[in-house]
Length: 539
Image (tube, rainbow, N blue to C red; front, side, top):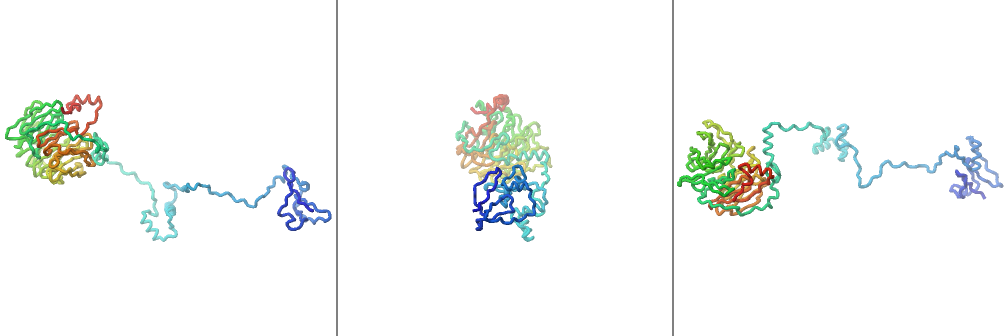
């Protein structure tokens, strides 16, 4: 019986006998041998001659034949370096890297800076948009480009020239600074004011801190009978007499006393608080020294009642019942330096801006005028036209007030049939806000510490209302603040208290706002001046 020859190993040890699929027994013959393989030697039985061996044209070395006959591969020889092919084909590893399913494929192209041709950029962009410009018709491509606004032959992202610099004109810079707070958010700080955010929850006492008797107070909407000076002294007109009440000590002083058959129609303190101007129904305007209680001069000339006065330095302006406004220079003998003609009815509201640049006037003709503050010589050709004339009110305009922390803001309020507050930008003449109230508006006071303002009202509410700016929301309301309509109001020098007067012959003081706390050093320095914050209280 024939046997399968043993395959030699590198170490010369024989493996166990195994049957190979290609052995001779597979074909039913036991005598098949591969004579062309020099490494395999087959043993044949002696009874049968060996098959003839086919001679190879390749000459084999004798030493190699000898090694193959004994079944050994010499270590370090040529045969040990032969490669043995175990598999016919080994596929190369895949080029793509394995990615997590959660990671999308990345586009390595630069979205912003590219060196490709613009046409290629557009084509690549269209390909990314799942557009097929090659298969699409030219008309469809043109309509698509027109609809999307993407030009086919121009870059979407490109460099442009920087925007022009802001104007260096000082007037434009000043105008921008003046209107900047007008567009600020409600609650943001502006100048010395604090925001009104959250002030709806702020509690304002509905009880007056102090009430003073004011016998002889005239119940007339078109008069202006109280004023609070920078020296913390309240001036009030009762009939034909004018009194000064010192809020620091509570002392009352009689300033002037007129004839019994007349009455005082208006009064106002000068900016420094040293002088008091008093207007009368006969058109006369008197100037009094507050400290000595002496009359300095009388300035006549008006043909009718002087219902309102307003100071600007040494200029005392008076509004007359005939619709005229005069500027009096109290330093010179010829006191009339200018006349303004812009009202057809009685002038009942008059207020200079703190810087003296503009003057606001309101009249019984439902007109609000804003005048240039420059004063010139009186002559036939002297211009007297107002810078702005507003006819939005439908009733008499008595309440006019300039904003202390934004000089460009002016508030005006109308009478019974109007009952509306308008906020104006006096730089552009635009009306910024409007607020309809439930009753006639007799006066307006701005807070110097908050973005808020106060209004006093007549029939039917007789109320005091506090509003936020610019939201115009109502923060507080004191209903029936007086038994009669609230006619006049004045604010204290420190901006905390508001004094109101009405036809019920009472003078009431209300704590509306809180002044910011000052440091010890600042408070000590402020006490040296005449407007010390520490003494601006009432007793």
